Image (cartoon, rainbow, N blue to C red; front, side, top):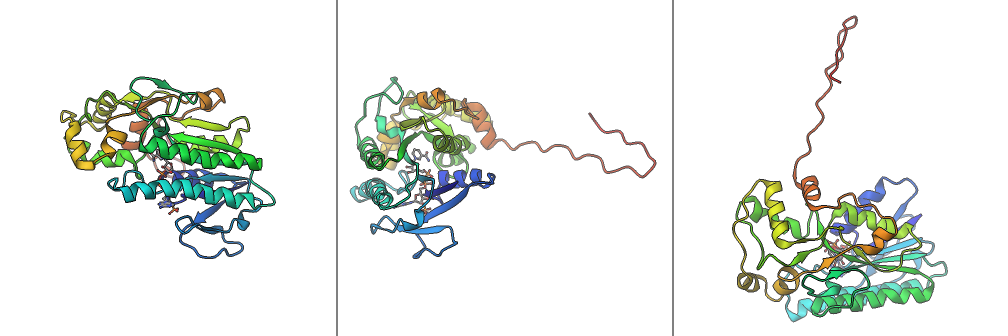
Length: 323
Ligand SMILES: NC(=O)c1ccc[n+]([C@@H]2O[C@H](COP(=O)([O-])OP(=O)(O)OC[C@H]3O[C@@H](n4cnc5c(N)ncnc54)[C@H](OP(=O)(O)O)[C@@H]3O)[C@@H](O)[C@H]2O)c1
């Protein structure tokens, strides 16, 4: 099977390709923003979403496309120029990709396109599965446009899965890595009221969900990629403190977050969504980390190494190994 991946170098792209590296019959192709020409036999395909340049011909025969590329959401303050970069990188980038797929003789059978639980907007305590109505706000609008561009691939006979990804927990990047320095210093705490929901997912489960979406023909349309047990920010805070063995007594007041990060505070930190992965579970997906504390422990607590076996006894001696 050939799987082509955009956003290769990102948090999720890296987890996905590492997980595929262990699979013998999968070849991966990288949609690469840094190379300028496709060389036969090299698995990097040039594409430049910012300039709208993409020759999809090297994707001929690829079985699946995983589209993860997009300007970082929380990397910079949301000026209007930055918001436009976030929007265009996803909406125009997805259109460019789908237009390229349109020209292929042998099209992939599936496109798995990232989206985000931001699609639902700020929804209080409402439980949100894939049948929920769309939300409002900047991220919700971007997600709606992004998913709509991906959906156009269905007209080409391609199965499309828009993966509404939750807060990805990882130590190589993303939200958790931003929190860790503060929590490790023992000065972490809830954000705002702490009542806003956090629908999280362990990075290994995101990679597994993408692979599952590729391999499950019955899965199509929007699919929530969040663990089945979302938590309120206060519970997340306490759990993280417990796992790190640090106090969590220093709340970050809403006004301070608004001063620190601007509009992003309300969309990303002070409001949330209580999302459940109804379609993944119904299709038989099994989460490696369905609950928060084991997920955080897996990521943050060094694993005990097995004790080395005693060295081989001199010949003739009788060895006793611990059982
Ligand atoms: N991480 C999360 O918590 C989370 C939650 C919900 C949704 N998502 C979505 O899932 C996707 C993958 O997430 P991620 O955490 O892996 O994101 P990420 O670490 O920010 O990686 C995104 C990748 O997109 C490419 N990229 C960066 N700027 C770009 C631009 N201006 N135009 C086109 N491509 C650009 C880069 O890959 P290359 O250098 O390889 O091109 C980058 O590594 C993203 O679209 C993200 O919005 C993530």
